[in-house]
Length: 110
Ligand SMILES: [Zn+2]
Image (tube, rainbow, N blue to C red; front, top):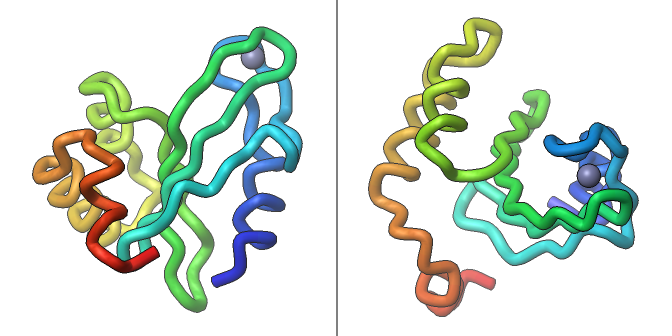
């Protein structure tokens, strides 16, 4: 999967705070673990910063997940239009994930 693809995907997303569309230059790809890609985004309009996770699988539409708060996870679980397996995968991962990106990405995958 190319970073360019992911950055184009990000430009279809809006800032959760002010609704401004992100631009390619506002996104930094942090790395990925299997199908789960992490990015940091910066909103040029309201200057809020956030983490974005995208689940990307071959032949499937990407699932975009923003932020890692309890609230967001609950919202994601409540969505009906997504593939249940993917939600479970991500939910399991988030349960294990302690928020330490430097540790996650020092395992040689990136
Ligand atoms: Zn904003």
